[in-house]
Image (cartoon, rainbow, N blue to C red; front, side, top):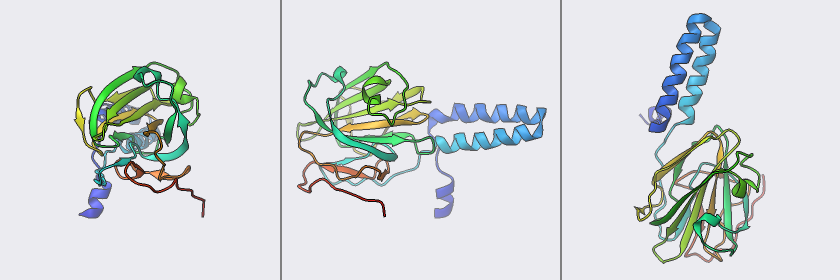
Length: 230
C-alpha cells in the first residue's frame, strides 16, 4: 500500500485541463502515426508528473519558517522586499529556492500567521535563477503577520517558461505553515524574506522540500549554517 501511494500521487486540480489536453492530442497524433502517439503519451505522463501534489509532513514547532517550494537553494543574501508591499528600503535576509521543470510546483505557506497583503507585479520572464529575476520578473508577493507581530514575505516568481502564477491567498486570511496556497507553471523561483537578524538554516545548493524543509527558526539562536559537497 505504501509503495502504491508513492506511485499514485494526487494531481493538483489546476493540472487536469493540461493532462486532458495532452491526452487528446496524443490520441489524435497516434491515429495519424503511431510513433507520434507514443511521443504524446510520454509528454502526457510528464504533464501528470509535473502537476503532482503529494502530502507533506510539516514541522509544527512555533517560530519555524518552512520552505514554500521544492527545489534548490540558489541564493542566500540580503535584499529589499518587493516595493509593491510598501515595506520601505531596509534590506532583509532573503532565501531563494529555484524550481526546475521536474520539481513539484505546488507552493506551501512557510509559517503560521495572517495574510496582510497580496500584490501582483507584471514583469519579464528571465531565467529565474538570475538574481535580477527578483526585481524584473512577473511575481506574486505575499506579506503576512506572524503571531509575534513580525512580518514574513514570500514571493512566487515566474521563470523562462512559466506563464501562470496561481495564488489563492487573500488579505486577512489566517493560514498555517505547510498549507497549500498556489502553484507556478512551468519552472520558477520562490523567495522568502525573513525578519531582520534571522539566520538561514539551509545552505546554497541544498535541496528543499515544500512544507518540510526548515529554512529558519525565528526563536532559535543557532548561527547561519555552512555546507559543502561530499
